[in-house]
Image (cartoon, rainbow, N blue to C red; front, side, top):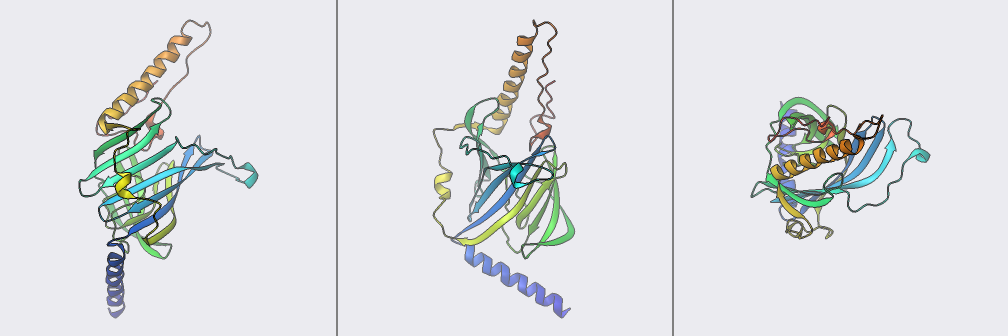
Length: 269
């Protein structure tokens, strides 16, 4: 009983100290973000999350590609620095608004500010716990837009945030993965209070004329139309070629959000 009381008191003290430190400062977390394609190629991104009292900003860029199994330094596939391939997630907590700033490089070839209401994630919190970087973490699961995610969060850092669009838990997410094994995030480093001037969240949230502002619903619609148009063009090009068949196909099954509240599923055979 006495031991449990001490643990509770230490927890309260930790939360109090954290609240004092982060009142006027940024929290900075770095993650390794893994994306597995074709079962043997791993895209490794470095994601950075900055959190203030009312704003959060997550940005990720390609770090390198590697072979999934038997990786040696000599087998690593280098990636040229491509500033066009990136993702930024900006969350205005006060207005409950999420904006994803991106370059759609496959079909639309344009930059967009895709905005939506902060999506609600329905979490199932389990009793499982483990330690990550000296933080006691609890496991939680959610099904979000067609994909089941499992995360580990810590209430010792009482910030309802994490990599990508994750939100809604009573603590910071330090680790996450989808149960199909395509996407995962692992803690790289954590620093608070963070007073470096490398990021200004207020400036990050300002509209940028280089990006077309568009709702999530409309962005999803024009992207689907662009995919279908490309398939039709390829089929038309090959329709008069004897013995040739158009074999271009696309599926949303490997996207982070393969389905959403605007459509059930989209396959493009």
